[in-house]
Length: 372
Image 1 (cartoon, rainbow, N blue to C red):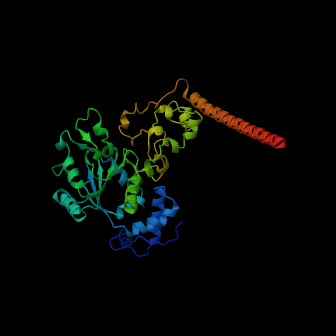
Image 2 (cartoon, one colour):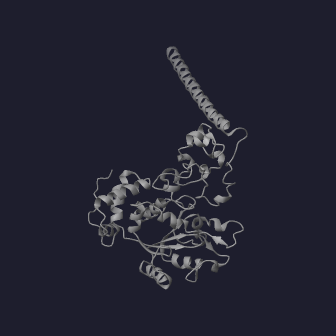
Image 3 (cartoon, helix red, strand yellow):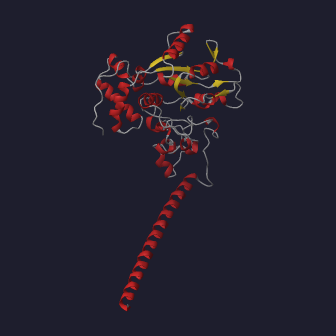
């Protein structure tokens, strides 16, 4: 771990200075940084770097635009427990515009957005939730401004865009056939700005704030092919699910109220999409880390994946091999073991043959030496 001590005097106007002005102690700030590093799956060695980066980082302006959506993403965020990592993060940024949360309304609200853009041009973070209707731009407006016009105007001066929720990231349910509003995602329209997709219906609160913390401290996180941060979307739920051992043993619930369900067996047969869904639900969880859908007895719906509602029915298994699924899983494990044993025997045979060949060569060389 690095022994370098972070600066004890935050830069003027920085996150560190703002937090101290809010009465947050040094100890509380260090605990926050440690929790944030853990949440982002960073090594403990990164904690001093995170402390220093957040102390010196300028407190960024954030403009949050809500378009064609259900407000579920904002609701998820505001339902977070207190005191919170999320709350501390949002104390460390300047949330200059969010028409669901802000006190201002009407002309005053739009003036706040325009002033935030002007004062922080090229530096502010634009957060968007909801899809954008193109079929009839007037279908969804804010202060008489169509969603598409407001997005294109506000995106011009943004340093980066965070698309929160499946609707903003992929188009979401509004884009479902026949897509009457002509809904599209943010990345369908914006091609010249860094875009971080934080999908989910809704996303986990600490995932949203973790992405903002990472951007604030270190810049853009490493993204996958769908522009999702790998730190939260790098593994599928199935690989980190506590029910995985039951899957390996071929123990599956057949209905939601049978003995297997009561014993907590795997929900794969009941349509769980955990094997094809990449998200942090199984580790970060919801409601103060209390639980997540699979732990509550319901299979994963795959809501962080594009067009998750078309994944072959929520309650139909991804695939059912010929014959009993549990038996097939057992056969697969047995076959894997047999292959391993066969490979081990072959390797030993090859090694024994190599030793025998070497001994033969050595003996022949000795004989040649005796005759020469």
